[in-house]
Length: 354
DNA sequence: CTCATTTGACCCTC
DNA sequence: GAGGGTCAAATGAG
Image (cartoon, rainbow, N blue to C red; front, side):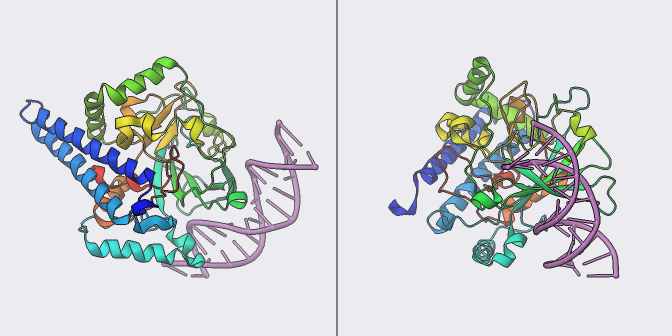
């Protein structure tokens, strides 16, 4: 590997840089405008900071982090938060240490990266969108949880055996809001199979629209992203299947299938300039409802893609915040197919909120 | 027949 | 010991 940097890494860095430059341009434009300039500037600054951190992390881990070890990501297994931690080199060392520990199988489970999404199911329209996170899951258990009204379901990747893919997820229905499901992902997908491929955008217009957003309307898109952030990352969910209401823990595994590049429409080049904004890995990329039929990338791009939206619980946001500053630990698999996006790339948390 | 789900039992961690 | 997570036999669906 030349210089230890793969093509994917270079592309990633290139995209990061480009995104950062765009954010800078945005900041220049916004500075001085009347519409809450402080907030705008602050948010833009945050975005820039995030890019810088991401680049830092990337460069730190680049040639070094070639081991592709199942990463300790921002999510940080088990303990979400230490909010006030400051980013420091010791954290990097910790990351290295954790990665080394991954060699110990017995610790594998413990160290698996972990993050949470919240998915709301709309009882009216009742479509099965939000659970299509692009992977193929098989339910292996269900458990009544102390203090929880509803049982928790356990899923693992269908290809655990065939491809040694150790990704799992837990689905817990919210007590307060039965329409809300908290999905905790653990581990990364190492499988490359695609039993069920994510459908292409339903219509050329939508695809075109998306494409335009990626190119001609970058600034507009950024504004929408900012708007999304302002809205606490909470977006209404539509067109979801209320079948889940009746069987909350039977998330259809059939509609998933590990994402396959040729169908995912997520090639880096296709993402163009929005790669950093929209190209979030699983579970941040979710197939939109059958109606919208194209991807959503949450939480940063939700406003651009109708249909299903992930929600982040406050704790998750905090976690994100924390990991951004505290856990520059990487889980970047640069061995990925150029068009495949690493499920665990720690964009879930980091920079965008720091 | 094959594969996914269910469910009670077992294991692990705190 | 309690609770959460996983295993694996039984069962069901296609």
